[in-house]
Length: 256
Image 1 (spheres, rainbow, N blue to C red):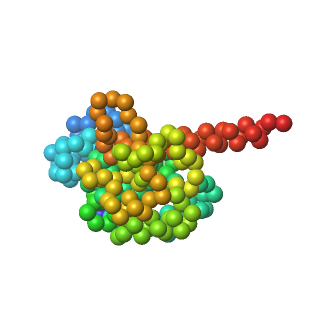
Image 2: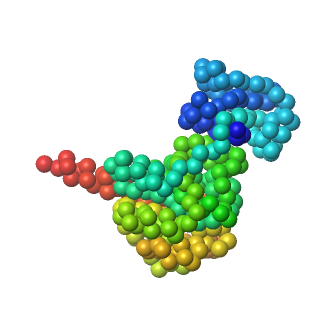
Image 3: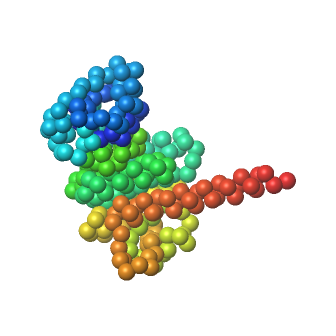
């Protein structure tokens, strides 16, 4: 059994896998914002319990739970690389993956999964060791996106990258100081974007496995971004380019 907490994570879990939800606990002090959760849960015969806020804090392991928690049967189910590749190919669209090299902070990991889900990424790949896994704090930071996004944990990121390259996927490292400019680089292709850890960036062997490296140009006095910020900018720039290419293709088809 695993615990998730927060209004949006519980809502998204109800949408994604209601059959796995055991019960929902809502603070008796919570006066608003949970009607949708209660109605959906009751419609699916999921038990809803009212409890003191202190009890929910204890269940969640943190007071930052918005007065809502839920218990879900089983642990978080990770995908595998074969599954991600299979889903991409079945979609008939260009590959679009996000590889996270040793992200340690749950807030960053959750934010990156949220951005990836919103941008239409096929799947997120993280290392099995020396990196944050999907915890309740990550689920909360993702606003429930972890319940919809496939996340694979790989023992060896370099090997995973080589596998993707064998499938025709281009690997783009996002890192400060690279000569390439993300806004002037073609990202409308079968692509995996690599974002490094908060302190060390992308590890050397992982970086050497990438096909090319691009940076995000900045003009302010602060010359660095968090991993979550850089990753969000990167996936949405790739998304922008894909939408632009699709629009050009549509207009071309409509032109007599």
